[in-house]
Image (cartoon, rainbow, N blue to C red; front, side):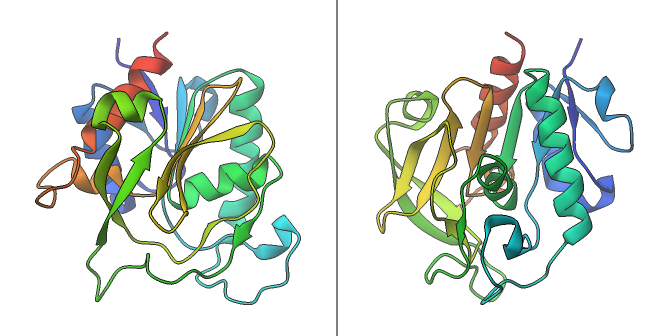
Length: 209
């Protein structure tokens, strides 16, 4: 039976994620029945309110306070049960804040240009990302905030050339974060970039253990 992946929100708003999960062999689930699902996917979106990580708002925009609260509750529920979690872009940042880390509210050079993702090189530490893509690979980028202080229990798996944390995992829990957007690289991905679908396949493989 395919693993059920819970995504908070409306399916119509997350078509890329839905397609990536389905192509990787999972079943995306939306609605209020999160307890029935096997794992949690936190997708990209607007910024988290900065008070949640102890800062005044100096550059946050497109705030989603209700979503902040709901996703933090979901993280508490899924991690308490040892269920796997994958955070993408904003989702990765939410995970970091959940574990006591903070964010840099604005960082140059990583946001999209006129609606088109930037492309840049990243370096992988030994991990499933190294196994998938080797020591270095090319990914996309569409964010203006980055990981600041790393949350408790998290370790970095991937960095951009400017030092920005592009991926991490929790040392003892089945929790992973990816700053870039593998779902956008799962279909007609940009020339020279990784196959993002491999991230979703790896996540579901780990979730099935």
